[in-house]
Amino acid sequence: MDIRKGDSVQVISGNDKGRRSTVLNVFKDRGRVIVEGVNMRKHHTRPTSRDPQGGIIEREAPIHISNIMVVCPKTDQPTRISHKQLDNGKHVRVSARSGEMIDPE
Image 1 (tube, rainbow, N blue to C red):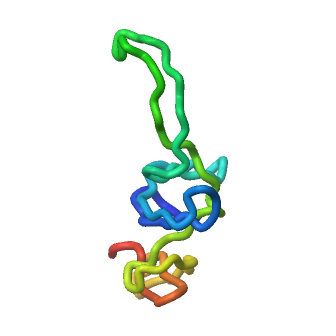
Image 2 (image 1 turned 30 degrees about the horizontal axis):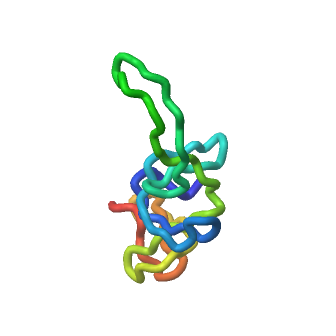
């Protein structure tokens, strides 16, 4: 899976198409990610000692990995990811659009 927590991504399909945000959580086994402010759902909660009021809370629901693309740091456009091995043996993610490294060294 080429998308990691903290990546800047753009939604490419669905109701939130075109929206940009950061990845909050990645579920590798299910192929889904939670993106900040995207795919908001209402969740009904019952009163507890921590939240005595209860009520309806809006929170992000997971979105499929195929519906988002990483934003290239150089061109500020959505891009596919390729992989490259540096001279020191370290593997990094590279923007297929510009060749710019996505991972900081």
